[in-house]
Image (cartoon, helix red, strand yellow):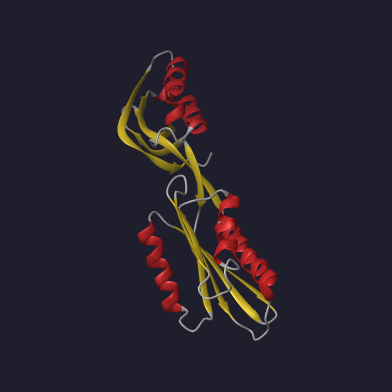
Length: 214
């Protein structure tokens, strides 16, 4: 599958940390945006070092534009009561390039298998909600050169179709923007019609998955 054949995917916006206490057990949920399995395992190692005294540091991660690399761990909790519930949250949200770690400090009261599943599920869901979800779209970078007379309408049109990265005001206005790859042909046609051809448009070699805020 090529990048262009996968127009977008969902991931988390930022690092997050939440806390949930039930029957004296403390659950600390964290989410991290990650770009590779190596980055995910490094974050897990950091958490384990930071919370060396915790009873469990359970985790799940999905990496790759389709979540093709997926791992989870119960870290000593009964089988399928911790890592899998965390993974189920990530899959239900359809997010990838994400790591979620839930650290537990045991409070002395057993929660039972059902209680553990609910606790880890809630901690993971709270952490994802706190991290926020965004859509990354496969986009190409275009350089638009327009005169001042047409700048206002062109700027508004470009902003409605993608994300403006930079604007340079000199003899003409030069706009650098990212446009979804799937929309680029329509974009070129419509922006040319909008200015009656009084525009210079050039696609650059830059293309990647970025947050367009769409």
